[in-house]
Every structure is written in C-alpha cells, then in structure tokens.
Image (cartoon, rainbow, N blue to C red; front, side, top):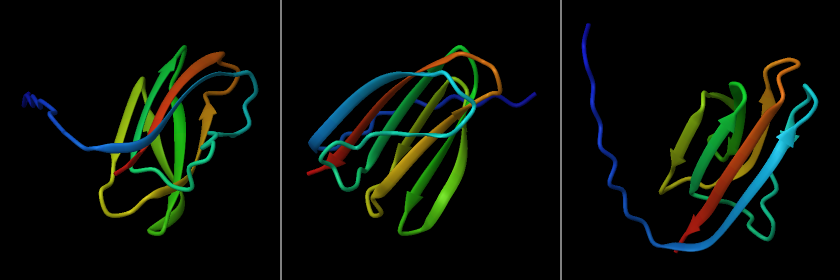
Length: 104
C-alpha cells in the first residue's frame, strides 16, 4: 500500500492558551470550556480509553463533527473556533486532554 509521512513544524505566536483535562462519564456531549477566550485558532485533543467525536463551531459552520482517535489537531489562521464539544463512544470511560489557544 501507499505510505505517507508528514512532519509538522508549525509556528504560531499564541496570545492566550488554556489546557483542560476531564473524564467523559456519560454518553452525552460535553462542552469544552473556553474560559475567557471567545474564539481559538489552535485545538489539540488527546482521548485516552476510546475514540471520541469532536464537534467544532465557527463562522464556517455549526457542530462540524471530527473523529478523534486518539489525537486531533486543528489549526485555523483565518477563522476562529467559537465552540467545541466532545462525545465518547457509548459506555466507554474516556479521559480527554484539551489544549486550546488564540493566535497573537
């Protein structure tokens, strides 16, 4: 089969950032807290225990679903992400680490 190798060396000056860890203990969507940030340009998520579904909202669309198994990295220079939520696989205890940041 085809092989693909990608190295990521992305540099961006960040103005504000927030890191959060939490347990998904129900099968319902859980909002990712943004603290004092109204929008972010960088989203990094790690799910431990099972795959999760991430939904992102921006000026380009509402609740756009993205699979995260186990990592998800989303960088947008031009359109800020204004809301995120995460949902675990049914009945699968999952720990989620989220790092979000706004560019300078």
